[in-house]
Amino acid sequence: MDQVALEPPTQVQVVFVEDEIKEEKKEVPIVEAAKSDLAPVILSPKKGDTVTLLVSSQDFKIRALGRVKEVQDNGNHILVENLDSKKELWGRALNASEVEIVF
Image: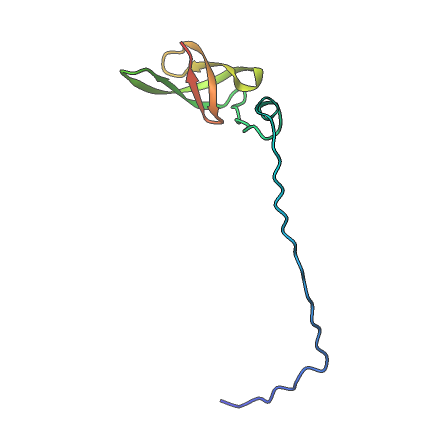
């Protein structure tokens, strides 16, 4: 293996970067927090999406596949059709792929 002599650099550039990290704390009244962007946003399914239907009580839990037929009030009220029975049921979005049936 041949040895290669490296020449020292003719020009050296030194860069100093100072990043200040500021942590800002803000007290927000509870009523205002519920109305603001600080509250979590639940993604709701769109019309035509296939979703998992969840029905539960203290004694049982049932999962089924359904299709979204109508979305109202930003996912708080969703009309879905059970793909097996073809029955229409009302529920609310848990996330973009799950709807909890309200009965």
